[in-house]
Image (cartoon, rainbow, N blue to C red; front, side, top):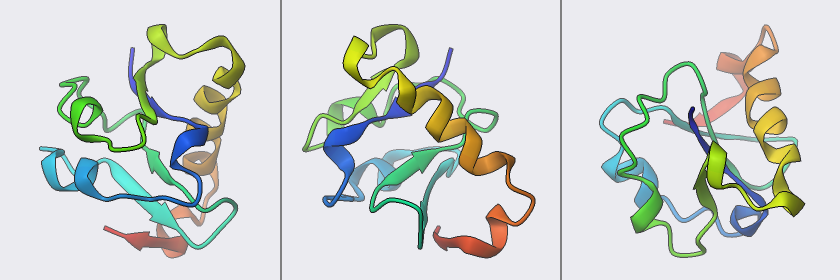
Length: 91
C-alpha cells in the first residue's frame, strides 16, 4: 500500500505534506496537472502527509474514495516516464 494524492490537490498544491515527508517522496511537476504527486516506490507508508493536507487530498490507497481511484494509476504513471526527474519542479 502507498499514499495517493487525489483531485482536491489540483490548483492548491499546499506543500505542508512535503515539509513533513521523511523521505521526500512528494513531487511537483510543470505538467500535466496542477497538483503534487507521491512516488509510489519511494513512499514508506508512514502516513505523516495525510493529516497535514489542508484540502484533504491525500489518502491511503485502500481508503481512496471510489470516484478518485484513477489517481492511483495517475500518481504511478508520472514516475514511469523516463524523463520524470527532468520535469520535476519540487523538491
